[in-house]
Image 1: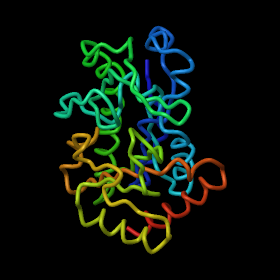
Image 2: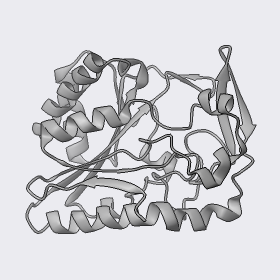
Image 3: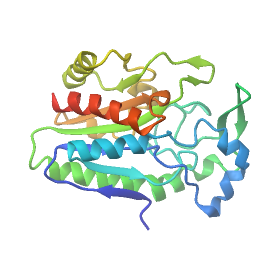
Image 4: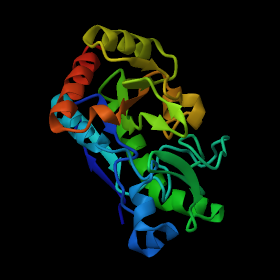
Length: 253
């Protein structure tokens, strides 16, 4: 069974991914022992409206689009299994979270995730993430036969406030310090007066390089994370505005 969705276009060098697109937890996991209210108040269940943005970019760029169809609480599809960082909470934890950040009455607090046992990490990664990673790697391999440069844009969204931190960024560009990434950031700044984060509110190193860490070692493969403040993605019109800014800047590369 396939736990991710893919739309492939071999005529485009662009691949869009959306690792935190879904809030779905398979029924057999019984919501990981969390209540409906806890899930509703969670800041780690998924990235709100990131998939809507990814789909609009998919159309405007005529790109390929691949995204998991399970919640990051089940297993985080933007983490490798051998990640060095093993913090049990916040966005830069390992691929299996054991604690969850929730907000209620404007107060944030951490709660344990009863259904997440670290002994399950390897099994879930192999079942849910490995097939997603393998399909993306195969797609990249095919595209490299046609294009000298392949671009992976990972589409995410973030909360303006997280774990006590106020994030004063509108569009975060998460990258590996490449010339292409810096060119992209400069073009974004030319396109908009929104605040552009250069490896902010988080950087690639914070998450062990992300799921495509090994792919990005190849200079022909550019892996850039686009993390949008979710306060800018609350309506279809707002999402379209961000899409246009990103599309113009991507086509400039």
